[in-house]
Image (cartoon, rainbow, N blue to C red; front, side, top):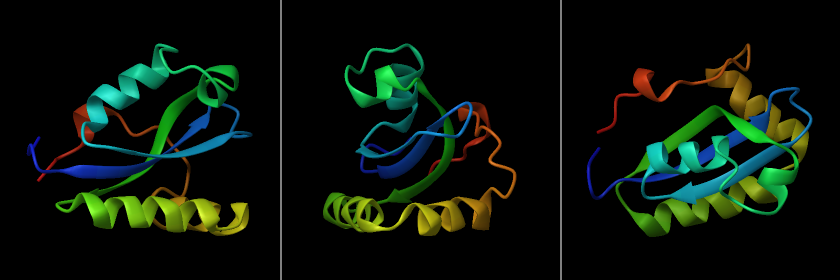
Length: 100
């Protein structure tokens, strides 16, 4: 993983009822933190463990702006975004990701 990579990601609970949008500079670490319940609050309470979407950026400011944009979207529009690249909402495994 490039040390100058930044990520905006969407994770859900396994039943799909809860959704979380986040920003990180280390997607692998962050997904592990979510899955192990290390992050208190919303993600721990609603068992946000399933990575369903991410975008990679070389610029932190661009990634932060994208995160803010996505958080303003309606749930329907967020669902549409996930479904454009992941129509079945399957869990994206870290071993499948090719980072630039």
